[in-house]
Length: 478
Ligand SMILES: [Zn+2]
Image (tube, rainbow, N blue to C red):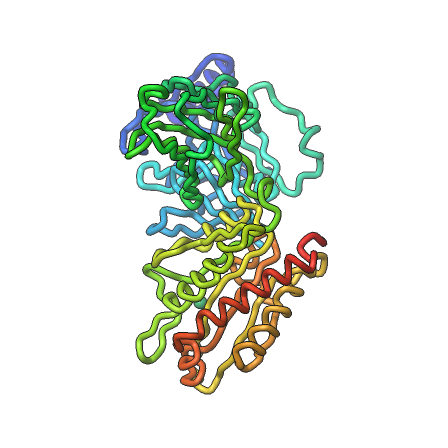
């Protein structure tokens, strides 16, 4: 049979059987460490009515989602696609949007906000495949799925409001409502009310609410509740898995005392209270619990030393020393809640620093760095802020803390200035500053920066500036 005839027959076959499941020649897909047969019919992509053919991999349907080769699809749409193999992350960005997705990770980073994906990027047959609907919509395109012809139509700009787009019968659901009662629970005497984000513990008679303590591992989105006593006979050792509310997983184990280890979907704070014969542990967004939250970000860390002095001092060491001194002062103030992006010599990514701060709903973000330049004469302190004509709070705080540092430390005043290109300033949603305390490439500055009393003095100035900012009430303005 010649190929034209084959195609014609295939087309008729497809047409006649559009309402039955039709399979194509099976191919093999390797992903998630396994090989899977795949025999769904090809998917046709159209961007602004132009067909797009991909060469390295065809579009692949997994469940109700379509994955496409990242570069081949999104670069013709005017976006830049960068693959960072060591982090297994893909960056997709254009003039207005930045998306960071991680292979097999359910969370995506979109313009400083975290969004949940029901289909993460995958490595299929050694090729990076990313979810076409999610990425397109985040970049401002409209997406239509035509199930009968297996066409994906991507258009920009969207001229019709999204709500009124005709939704084909076999449309890929835009938002799938998660099934209710999606809860697995092998624990005894513990239940979860997802719409109130509350774990309810029946109270063993020996347990007092005063014995309960909490460890907040927010960077892992994990909270450990210590019951200070062995209640494994009462709660059993087991787990609870949920797909709703803030709680993802609870496991109870015994580790010198009964521990509830709770994984949350997003960073959460807890309120614990006694209701009759029950203990209620409620999970809330941190900004729902605390009215003054500051994130202290020690720049660099781990494999990233930052600047380095001629004598081998690394910026990351100075940054963490100063940041931890600020942390100690803030910890002692009960009116204020502080979160650290790192407390040790580790390297959170810039995305993580921004994501955490946004998820927390912090009211102020302070990043601590030190400078270096190849001209050894250059010295002084400078503060960067995100300049936004509609929100002067970053600039206000930057100018205040800059003046305080220059005056209190006797450094050269290099001024507070707009630094809108700086990742953590651009991608955090709260007033944010980045401090460049001094120049490690300048002998006089470096001498000051490394004096034993410098860090406590600097920390006090940063602390006082943060307090003055909150006391001014400026953080409430917008
Ligand atoms: Zn730095």
